[in-house]
Image 1 (cartoon, rainbow, N blue to C red):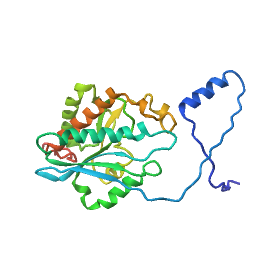
Image 2: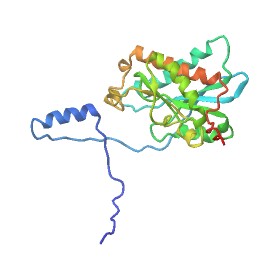
Image 3: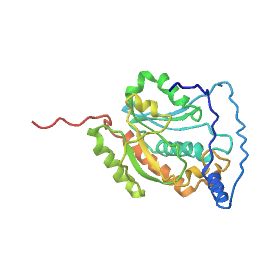
Image 4: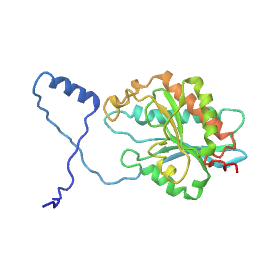
Length: 259
């Protein structure tokens, strides 16, 4: 009769790609029996927090660039690629800029977000707590996809700011980075800033092997290649330095059409 029968919450489980591949190989040999022990529990909410550090700017210090990562991880592994690597990348990039003789024009705010894995609560809390200065945020980006090479640079800059994105790509091309053909997402924790109108930036990484380790016991420090990690740091430092020392309006709309 078309009436829906409420089933309540259904149990669900995820199988990592390496385990799925192993299961597929076994199935080619014949029938397979799987014993599944999900072994999870729902715990009460607990306090978390964001860790925030700044390189205070000069003449434009009231204008803020956010670069971030998230502190929490799944407890099956050590969280090396998700997301300790991201935290190392953005902190290292900021440290390189901070070591320069002159401070940047704009303030660079490094945010290590808490409680991303179970709902992006750190990013949501950031926007609420900094609501009075969201309009002064120049751009936001998050490193949260491991430590493999950055290969593309994407933005949600306004149409009038696309030449600035091209200028950044011209610099980043020296380390193998091209322009992205799709708009930036920014990252789970900075997404609330994007929804509030802050321009987003993606430094897109090669994720070929990322989901072989993501949220598994294999997410350990040995999966991080120092050479690709350093390429990430170089890309982030170059992007942040260029924008922090510019007067670019990354929200700029298209110029009016000529009469």
